[in-house]
Image (tube, rainbow, N blue to C red; front, top):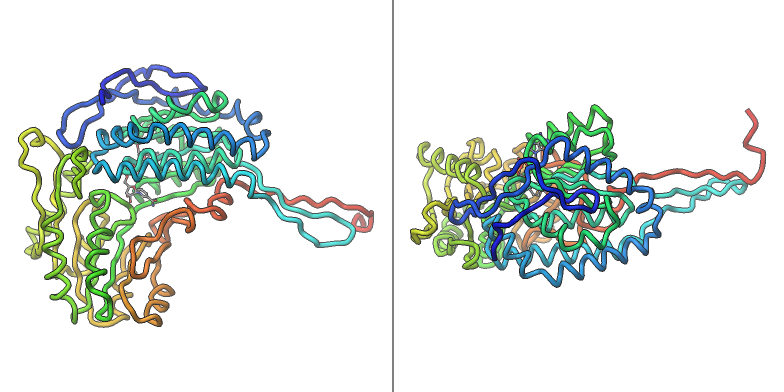
Length: 484
Ligand code: NAD
């Protein structure tokens, strides 16, 4: 696929050239593959203005009509799924089959929220026989969506479709590393939506800051790391703009001696290295009970060493890191671990293809015997690096798991039902999985405790609430309630 072509911002139903361009790099080679518009503050202002102007028309459509538009959007995306997956692999580096899952997730979410549009409403409240009281769910207005680079098509449609289904209009700012998937989605589906209802302005900190501090934005949906989340919340506070924050994690996977070890090993490999370790829900801390510590690692280490690491288009197990900055950051954690004498128990092999020499490679790496207080076991690395931590008791495992600033996900492996319930109750995270892959999908809300964020996405109830605000209506029949 030739991606080296003219890419433009999508504002008010029009494609407009950016005043400046920013290179997009193929992380497998380190070479520039395209140039994309780099949105400015003025571009964001135009987009917010367009989103405001289109609001009244879009929100006055019936929920069923909005849902029907989203079904059409989903159909077009499904028809172009292969192309979108290849595009994502080019700009993000991820293994092709994982890009395909990402795009199919984008289609499913679009259909899901299309279907949800006419099934979410207020409630009748019986507080008096002389009045009809009810609640109404209304859209916020303009939703500013800021997304990172790790799931571009999925994040684009997960947030946009929920916001649009509930009658909001959207200004989406993709990450400067991966702007192409979101821009291509706008090219494919833009004409299905009324002008101004969906706007895409990629860019870096300048455009992000302009969006989150704009007075014309009524609700923010931000996904990124916790430090940026802090800045976003501070900007939102100035305008009292409600913000949902989907932030980072330092997720623990806990294996007890009564676990099915074969499943636990396979689960840990999957949970740690999915999306090349660049998923917010990926495991970064592997807590092993001392009684199964050696046995687990004997099975786990060879599986990690045999992971294929290669360019995403060859569909390996693990691709490159998405950017040079990310590669340097993740490599610096590996260097710190080695410098501090922490034992590497497994390390996979990076590709020896000379065409990929400039790619952003960090091999899947497992450190063992890591002190829970060490930097490796506390800071979000966001790459294919796992710290193995031994524990002796259930209480100790819970304390280690909860002893970090984050609280996004946790995984528990045990066949003891009572223990499983205790862990679910005690782990300070937004999602726990027991004996399986990380919790997710349409059925369950996703979001974090502590520095992992505020708000929930991806399900029906919580997400529809997230993108609407409630109005209370009291309609009196009689005059009895007029007395002082
Ligand atoms: P980041 O915070 O650096 O950037 C995220 C987005 O914010 C980008 O679009 C960026 O351009 C923009 N941005 C940067 N500074 C800004 C500012 N001052 N104001 C407004 N926008 C600004 O994060 P990243 O490194 O791109 O993404 C990785 C992080 O995202 C990890 O911490 C990961 O855990 C997290 N993440 C969380 C979830 C979740 O659902 N909880 C999902 C995916 C990724």
